[in-house]
Image (cartoon, rainbow over all chains, first blue to last red; front, side, top):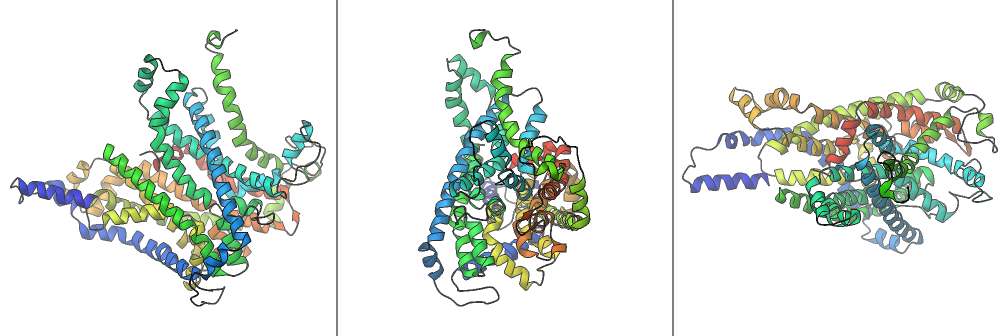
Length: 317
Length: 284
């Protein structure tokens, strides 16, 4: 983008017959060798530790590599075997359910929370600080306390439900497949909600007040103002947040690994935990790499839409 | 009192605002509160099915913390986490500043592609690459050492720092740098002496996030480092305090509390930086 503008400027100057006297910033901006020297460390780090591993990952997924063995080329055999395996089909289904449910919960409750936080005037810092805390605390450690809260015998959740006479026996939160899925979705929502709320709040703050006043004078009620002013103007922020969260929710490892390890009966395995189980615990690196590569098309899709949003925002400015 | 419109102005927000906010605050804080309560409770009360789990009735104990300090490698893990996080943060912020400066200020062939590459790696989740990366770490002879983490954490920190700082640098006017360059400063001197002092808040923000992300990292640490004494805090507490089917919940929660403490302290002091860093990616 920057290069294009540089050429454009030169073209404009040349057309006006001013080519020899280039602008000051033009001269200062052309430090190609400095630029390459500055980006070199970051570039080589990412080349060797992201680019190369990615190529390696593709190679692994096309080979029968095991721990300590290079393996030989087997074509798309790993992918074919995965797609016909019951556990992988279950993992696919789990990933879709987990991501769809957690994203919906985070979007709906995040929006509600952002709207509330926007109006909070007293104890503003304390309330915002408290709400953001789950996002900051190490996930692996905070998931431990959720595990303890769902512990079969001493679960505080069950204790409360029994004390309130909602149920009269212990609920097997983590050993029932559906409840376990509910639990991991709940913990993911708990951790991710602050990101949604705080980012949407920043988006809300950026909406000019006059628009609400104009809508109000045109007779729009609170619901009308929300649908016709807030939602359309918040749409770009909402899109970025949801896209960003899609990839990191789908790729979640910590919560599922700590809480259920993919169980019971593989009913909560996601790509990351199943890839870990195959690649590291049973040593089938080829299969494991193939599983994690299923994240890649989704990553590309997210990147594509994000970049389009960024470019669109840039042209509006 | 019959219609909401006639509620006194001072009481109304209590019902329409603070009452609905309460469940959100409760939901966010309860697990953390319960973590603390569990870590301070005596075993007799902890494992009494009849006792109310929310409160401590039979006295506070620091026994779990003592046991954690004496019988486990907790403080080694803590120090390991600290070393790795500081090293990875310094590396990533320095590389991030250099890369962000050239993307924000310099014109060069491939700037556009490099920007997109940074953006893509920013979105690559660690769980996509941990298998091949463990092979790379092995070949470099770094597995089972803290260096494995110091080298690999920047793979997700550098893109983040670059992205954040690039946005920040663009908000600083170019003119002050141009003056310095007319006075004979080269690019590096202008960056260090002119731009960085102005961009301190951005750099603090990048450093705080880089430290937090390193401290909280779990997957790479779990995969690349296996000796118990070299584990980082998150992995140590999770994998070393659970032996077979016996769970020492008091010690586990004590470890979780102490492990979260540095981040919570940083958070209390730098709340505004966290908020701005969090929203920087999405709202710009």
